[in-house]
Each structure stands twice: as C-alpha cells, then as structure tokens.
Length: 219
Image 1 (spheres, rainbow, N blue to C red):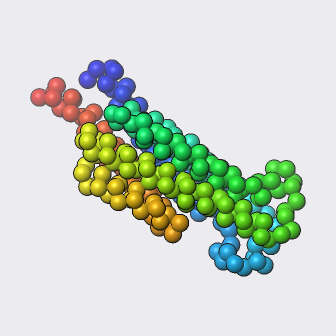
Image 2: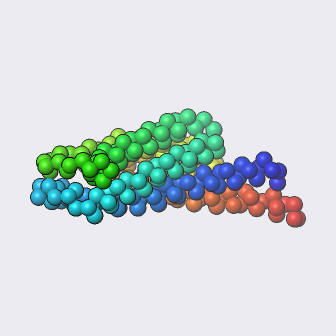
C-alpha cells in the first residue's frame, strides 16, 4: 500500500470517528441540558434557573453540544472527500450545524448569562420559557429540515457511488423525509442513530480496505 493511500485511509478514519463523537457529545449534552418537563408549569419555570445546579447542567450541556456540532463539521468534511459532487451535502450539513449552534446558545442565554456575567435571572417565567421554545424551534424545525436534506443528499450520492450499502441509503431516505415531523423529537433521534450506524459501516469498510492490500501482497 502506498504512503498516500495509507494517509488517505487514516484521514478518512479520523473524520468518520468525528461522526461518532458528534452523536455522543450531542446526545449527552442534550440530556444534561435539562428544563422543566411540564412546559405549562409557570411556577417551575419561575424558579428553574435560580437553581445553581440547573444552571451548571445547562452550561455543561451547551458546551458538549457545541463541541459535538464542531465534530460534525469534521465528519462532514471527511464525507465530502469521499463523495463525488457533495456540494449539497456540505451546504445542508453546514446549515444544520449553524442552526444547531444558534439553538444551543439561545437556550443557554439565561443560565450562561448568570454563570459568566452574573446577569440577573429574568423575573418573568414566560421569558425563560420562550427562550427555550425558540431554541427548540431552531433545532427541531429549521435545523432538522436542513439535517434531513443532508441525509437525503448523502444517501443519494452514497448509493450512486457504492460508498454505503443499499439498505442504509434507503433508511437514509426515510429518515430524511421524517425530519419534516422532527418537532415530535423521535424523528430527530432517528437522525442521530442513522449517523451513528453510517459511521460504523464506514469504519468497517475502511478497515477492510486497509487489510485488502496486505492480504494481496501476502498471497
């Protein structure tokens, strides 16, 4: 195997691992960044960010989600290099990252302002609740639609080039379309699962590609 081929496989492997890092960090961060489960409970919202534990969890979760989205950009770059004509993949993926970052920072504005700038917590619970609603809308409506475009474009190009198996590209088309209903959250969860499975499959194929020349030379 040539040095250039070895370097290319190594770079693709690192980029693919970044996809797994994205899913891990984003999922953990989303779980840590807790808000009242009952969105209509005004009393809970009124005191939620007054709790230092809730604020710390929100800030930690926001950092993890931001780091995860940055890792997704690395994964996106690696994926583009392995797909022919991946312009739409990059566009949709980049829009998803941008909206995900804005969503995270909007949701973290109140607890982050208190932690880093000692900004007073708003007395109105409706303000805190609306910040969270706007953040979720950015992620689960606009962001999810962009992510759906990314998955559909990736599945189409990967099917044409043979980068991914047929069953996974078909699943990608389904997951991409389901992002129209990501406001229900479950379709967005399917997006994360699809990215994770895609990374596992790509890593497996890279491992086989690395072993093939060695087996050939040994024979």
